[in-house]
Image (cartoon, rainbow over all chains, first blue to last red; front, side, top):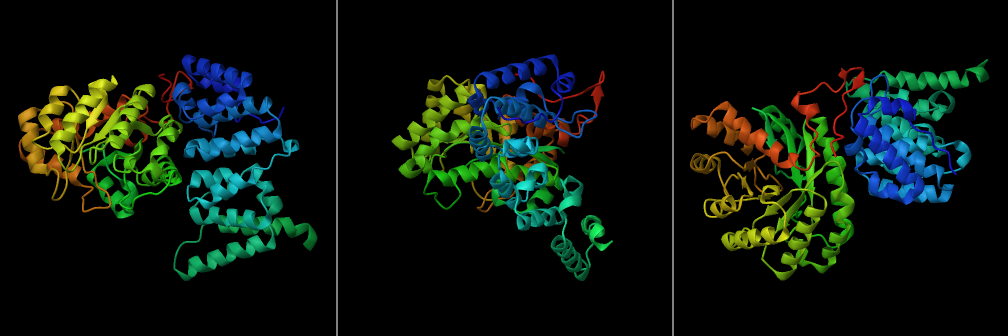
Length: 215
Length: 287
């Protein structure tokens, strides 16, 4: 009932898995489709049944693609409220890999679903785990209030998450964000430390955002 | 020297320790859930700790090139506090996680009824989740505690080869060896066991089913005791291969029984980007 797109096309993902791994994924998807609550029992151990590691030709880990496909199967059978409750539960009791998969799943939600998982993004942004911070600044971060979103971008600069991971930077960068990035650069220079190249990326994004108004 | 420390409480250690451990050859470790020094007063306090063991501490170790795994359990000391004992009902949520390679530390502290109940229940969980168990032996009356431990292990139906009985010494090692369980030794600066006594035990009993750990935590302890034991073994005439067996291959064999060890990224044994017949070589997928 809710649309959540997989990270990798299901047929393509299966081409990368072993025959046993692909069969295990089919079986888990079927279980979750029949009874969405089963995802709570399958999510943690899913990658042990399918395999883990980088997928050749994709900037995605197999374990993330597998878990997001399970989320997609659950979403298809749940309305927005029940899907949100399931995602909150999976995130609360997930290890870092499971939490990241939930965040990546939020980024693949159809915007028309109206589901707001910004509380999970804020939790992830309070951590210093760069894998979670990066996943929290994807498409779903459009639900974050401006101040939280700006601090999310600043946290990326601070923890070394490439701002290329920030969805919608070009559209949303504003004068306040550019000023925050510049103050961060001032502190680094005062300390004699290197200024990350991404500071310029953030400032330039704001310049481009405002260009039409300047013209 | 490549080292797998099978028992170390990294949450209590500094980044200096992580750097020194990596420099000494430590590439993998297991952090057992245990008492924090300050008693906990509620179940939520355990859950945040467990979350840290499968979350933040794992990430922190990875920053230093060390693969972090953990064991999850209600420890024997806090099994005596009714405010904490209920956490046992929530353990199944954690025992299915990828980074959890055993149930532990379970066992005895003061050998109370509550400890025995929690111990027996958690051995059942190990059977249910097909996980090894890590058993702590008491600091006081260790001999009697070890004997009762082995009786409970036998009654549980968990195979002796799936159990490590830890913190052993010259007095307790024999009965654990006879039972067919793995023998864990915590090498400390001034208690439990030191590296030279450890070498004598290895000379007398051989290298089978032996795990050597630093058990470093918030007390006076040394996260490099594994490396120092390896050095003491070499000085006593053991070969590099003997040291590798005790400090790497033995813990890999024991915790590998969980099916959940992920060591490729640190052991240099596989290129994660490699492909075979056009497919990524994906790890796992065995069960």
